[in-house]
Image 1: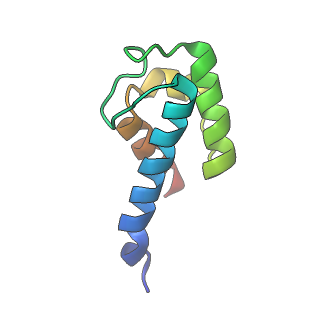
Image 2: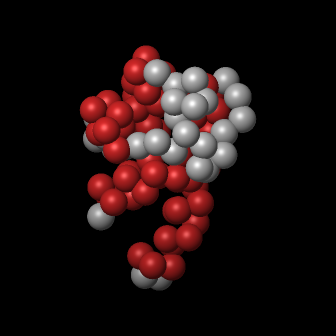
Image 3: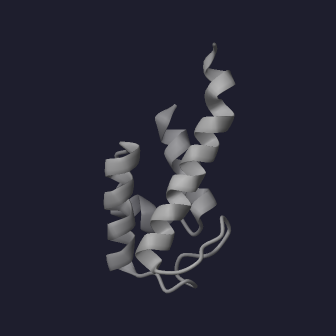
Length: 85
């Protein structure tokens, strides 16, 4: 099987992981296009999300990157995928 054959499942898994982490940290429902700060996010919660994502998705994402480049779970998953290439 080629890498492309695994991409949809990998994408779905990563999207689900990111949303699950946001739900846990933000203690509430989260959709793929919900804004982090509108959901009550702050720098402490951003750090918690980054730490969990580093551990669970084995990414080197930094807190600074999260705060500068991410507003939604969809954007975070896309950033992690782009860095994995």
